Length: 245
Image (cartoon, rainbow, N blue to C red; front, side):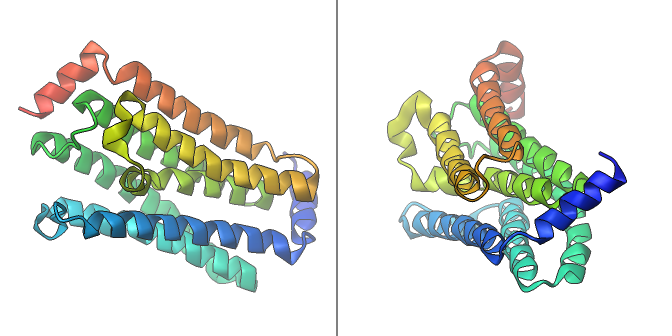
């Protein structure tokens, strides 16, 4: 994309009605509420013992919760026109993505090592689901950072990336033990519903969906296919068994 086309795209995006920015703020609020409700339901269950969980679980909770809070704040700043602070926090957020990848993979490995894998996930599926999920989140989000000069791509890829972070909360809201082998599909399907809302908004306000949503949808589907295809693959099963000691 040339500098001229980037400038035209940016000017066109600035001309969008205030409701466009308001929509992404509403989506950020919906994601934050989903995460809060999901974990609140989990904590309310008698068998939940979050306080006694290992330290790395608490670190994971703080690190990923901070991202949801940051995403919400960033959308508030855009809605208010505070672009300078938005860009400054964006630099922090880009670095935070890498922290989330490290913490997410470490927590997955430790869950296997300490035999804390949810009973409705076979160890191999759990390993692929968590690792592929956090890497997909990072890929979408860092792509959004790379395209930050094109606001239309940037905010839609950021939305798709943050939807990926909802996975643990959705796993606490959905009846996972009753879904059997379809548990991970149910989580992916629910995430796609959030993307569908954004697609329908685009079609209503722009006449067609932005291509960023094709990439976001494809990333979620590809992640699910990797979970299905690799979760029971002999090398993954061997690795999961080795991590479990």
